[in-house]
Image 1 (tube, rainbow, N blue to C red):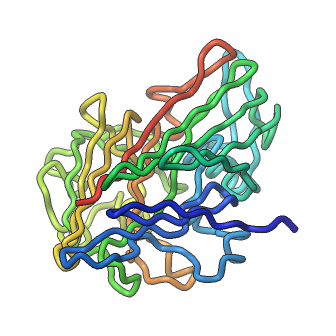
Image 2: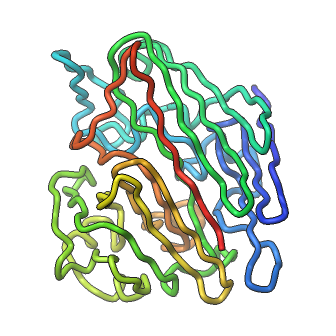
Length: 316
């Protein structure tokens, strides 16, 4: 059995622990308003639990983040059947995806580069793909850079699945956190959590264009909130080419700003965390990516075109 190894990055602002399994963020410590470090991501104390990691804590997700309906992926004029691991659909790249595999690790200045190869028809996906994910510390920001190359036409949609709790205490919910998203549209989901329709955010409880406490959302009612097991598990489409959102916890004084060149972000409010021994709604995920299943901005790549994306987590 391959050994799970921990790699550390740190500067005066941030401390990060990363795993060679899933290229996962295990720990992310930032300074609170009193100058004390707090770990702001959920994870397992027992490192062996990352072999299963059913909630994908901190992991890189691929080849495709989110759900693909009926496991069917059309690329060019071919239809590919992917691995079925979620009610007849493909979730986060299928069973034993790159989130649950070992990556090679290389040190660079102020960071680490994680690499993995995914062969042709791996979980049904076409083409041989080489993926590199870099984690780079720059003062108060952690940047994740995604790069992939392939030998033939295929589709990629990568993200990171960290669960943020800016209080630093997983016994606290996110209800008091203040969220703001630069997005006029979100994407509704069906009963299987498959994204299916773009919805304008005017007069909608999912509207976070003006800063508001998550508590205000959770106290309201909406069929989309009910479908997601009383929370958010939805893509938000950014208004600008560079997407931005921010979230703040007043008790800790920690504010997180997210910046990305991805067209959307799937926000997930930990609606099933209680199933694995954590508190429901005790964290929030910002899975920057393309809208799953709808292919609104599809990242089709081939031997002449690489996949490149970035996301920055900036702490104040």
